[in-house]
Amino acid sequence: MSHATPGLPAGRSSAAGVNVLLNTAVEAFEGSGKLEAIRAGGKSYPADVALVGIGIVPNDELAREAGLACDDGIVVNARSETTGDPAIFAAGDCTRHIGREGVALRLECVQNAIDQAKHAALSMLGKPSEYRDVPWFWSDQYDLKLQIAGLARPTDQLVVRGNPEARKFAVFHLRDGAIAAVEAVNAAPEYLVGKKLIAEGKKIAPERLADTSIPMKTIA
Amino acid sequence: MPKIKYIEHSGKEHEVDVPAGWSVMEGAVKNLIPGIDADCGGACACATCHVFVDQAWLDKLPAKQDMEETMLDFAPDMAANSRLSCQIKVTPSLDGLVVRMPKSQH
Image (tube, rainbow over all chains, first blue to last red; front, side, top):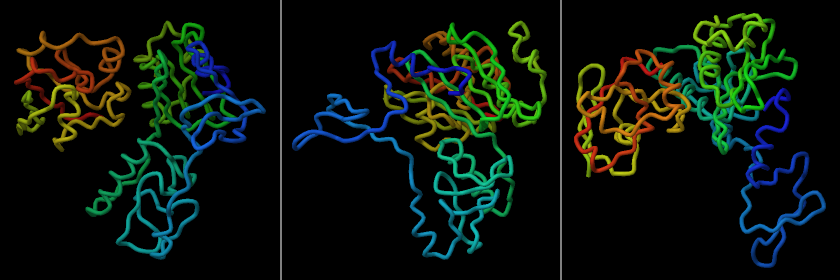
């Protein structure tokens, strides 16, 4: 989550009895014959199971051998066409594509896998259409429903709508006045309308966005 | 096994057996029935598994939770018998359920 909401959802985890260690590196898995503890930050934490989430490296060996351009992922254009063979298309986490903001990126998310695949299929059918969908993400953590649309940047102007204390709010990221991303916590209308406004490149005054007396349905 | 009838917006009908415990959404997606996208996989996070429940079955379904209500409020062509099919768990008592798909989920 953005720095407008420090400690959340990590704070929610600790309230639920889950110890979240930020800015701490794992130093070792400990145990004889089986995992017994994880050493991190100089301390040893008892553990039966370790779930390792460290990002992915795309398996693009096959694509390289086939002569396709690769650069931390199989390079494709907005129509999911590869560079090197007009009969080969690629979609999903393994691709480096041109995003809707015109910047090449590799996106690891379900939305990208679904939407990029649709564009690959359209290209194969000879009905190409440019992939410009707004990326979106979700997670359910305890009683927090996180819904995020768009890709935030550190330089975005942040507007908070709602009350973080009440765990029902959204953080809008404005770029040149237009909504570039929204992070919603238990705030589906903010997420749903926000996603639409991102796609439309709508500009909305920060004071208006922050005013919860104006329903999201009529915010634009 | 409960039978569920899914009717596409075009009128094309699909009657399939759906195991109890699955959601109505899963019954469609796992049987490759078009018209229910379920982009979020069933987390009540996207509102792309919208269906219209046959009037005869409306009262027999579990009530909507707040989140489903809110998500539906923004679904295209929302109506009084709208539901998110990922939020309806199939039980033996839903044998014969009929749902219709909207024109589009987006």
